[in-house]
Length: 164
Image 1 (tube, rainbow, N blue to C red):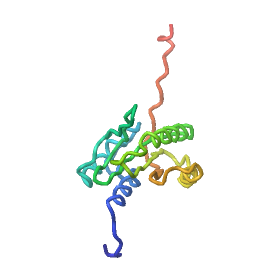
Image 2 (cartoon, rainbow, N blue to C red):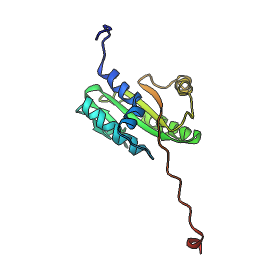
Image 3 (spheres, rainbow, N blue to C red):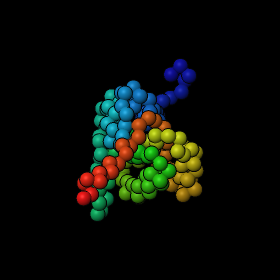
């Protein structure tokens, strides 16, 4: 308020999402998967917006879709993706594009954030923003790319004894 700028609920929601790495640091979490990140962000969202819902249902004719978080009072939802590699980012974007179609046209949800949590500077956030523009993504979707700590656990390999 000292700068005389009005702050909206959507501004606060977006700020929380953009500060996901700080939330992870403050909670001393070492995320290995998407749900580890979501769990910690949900705690903060619930403080700022008590009506925050985990996986609200967005029903279409044949299928229901569930963003990771929804804040009904803001008509806003967020979808999180966790990526360790460039290939995982590509896969995450495919999922986001599918979600865009499934979430669209529902009166209760009008603003969407696609948060891609990377564990390294794999992609420049401007590249994702440029792709959204190039693909003429609905203006009610905004990408947020953040870099935080963590990383997937290496997949266990079968021992030679187990192969026999």
